[in-house]
Length: 375
Ligand SMILES: Nc1nc2c(c(=O)[nH]1)N[C@H]1C(S)=C(S)[C@@H](COP(=O)(O)O)O[C@H]1N2
Ligand SMILES: [Mo]
Image (cartoon, rainbow, N blue to C red; front, top):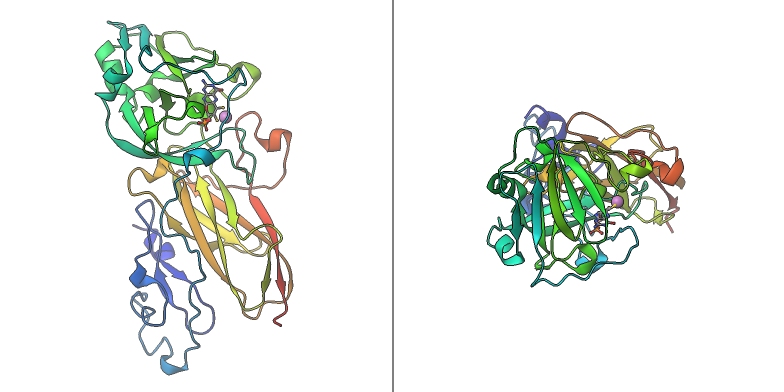
């Protein structure tokens, strides 16, 4: 908990005495308890260990601004009909659930052929997981978060009995799409097959009846309409990989500003809520910083993370910008995230496919807003 000193307390008001709020800590659940919100009654509840009532200024303290509306308190789920869809454009297969079979073939002791009912019986319950496309551009929407009912792939591979010499699994889909991941990814206890999405059977556009959910990799490694898993001793080159996209497809640390909107106008003195989402690979998001001066200075944002395996779910972040006393004009807002291995987003250039080719982008998202005179 070394990071606690730097991150556990967040200054949400300016002036001589700041209200200090218990904020995000590392990768744990960070929903701010409502009692720690900086209302006038709660502002003394979460005070840094070093501050005393006297040093906080007693009655001379300027009134603490209340939090603006819309401060996120939980990790958001993307409704199925708003969840982005990417496919290779050969039409979305229509699979009959009664005759559907998932085949596990190749370097195994016993090939398996599993019906949807047989898969359902192996369900390990519902788990939250974020999916992002490798070609999601800076500030883009090719990312979504859902609760999926899952079957751990590892158990199926153990049932089939993986033979020595296996290095990868090739995953094949009903639309002709195919890709592969190393065997150790397939055997990761968090490598799942999904059969439902946000409480409904997997929608057709998202791979009915079965899709893959692998930890730490972009969507291109996670087939929808899955029909075959072949265990192999030969490295395989998948559909997008053949066209030059990354074979690893490890998710790069990235973040998007969602609020405020681009070119939005505020009045000097307002408490401006800056918030968005961040996502990273297997190590998760450990920090998000916000700049209101085009990257000159950075401030730690509050993090709101999933209670279970937050590293595999997007991190919602927020920061309240106190604009009292700021000059009027145009301000460039930026957000940058750092993953669990210490990789921090940098740079703002934009190249081919929004700089996503061939292995995704980690460039910083920026947004301009305006501060106008108080009327
Ligand atoms: N069968 C099949 N699976 C696929 C694809 C595809 O074209 N066909 N596209 C992949 C890509 S590039 C992404 S980003 C994700 C998108 O999943 P979604 O459409 O459910 O968001 O599915 C992956 N799985
Ligand atoms: Mo993708």
